[in-house]
Image (cartoon, rainbow, N blue to C red):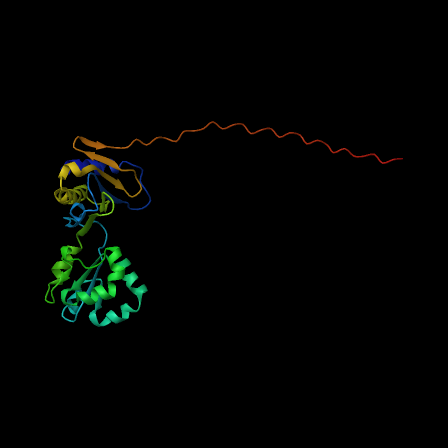
Length: 252
């Protein structure tokens, strides 16, 4: 699939009725013939997109004194090593961190303490600093370069269900930019699959509140929206006149 087909899908998705808020485009790839119990057939990628998606990517830093100043200048939240004991006794604060941040950078030489302090909460939520995404760094790392890259990076995952779903931009963004974001995800997922095209069931695009349009090699298929069937209203039943109550005559 190429950019032309993705632009056609974007145009088709925009023909649905407008909403009173700015909707997001969601790009979906449904997969098939994968055994997700096998790690080698699972999909887990970090894709650097060519364009911004219209939302702020928030980055937290878990660092020692060597990177503290850099982290304060480049990251949204900084937790230094000497603050770990505070979080170890406050699980609510750890859950708040996990909820608010998209990625965490961690200094490699304190990773055992990162795992001990944050692992139980971050792990199940997929928020542990991941070396595959470049998020586990040396004490002399350049955080400015790393954070600039992460702000355009999306995690693409199909580990529990055979489906990839990624927000690729807002509806008011240039169509070419959204299409190029879609193309980056499609290409990376395609090359990750063991049988490439044979493992793709279908490719879809939708806005937040619209049904999906299907993208094929032959073109875009837009779902038919059936108009609601009007049922004939039955005339209201006429009210029956109330019977007058009989008044018993008193004996003379």
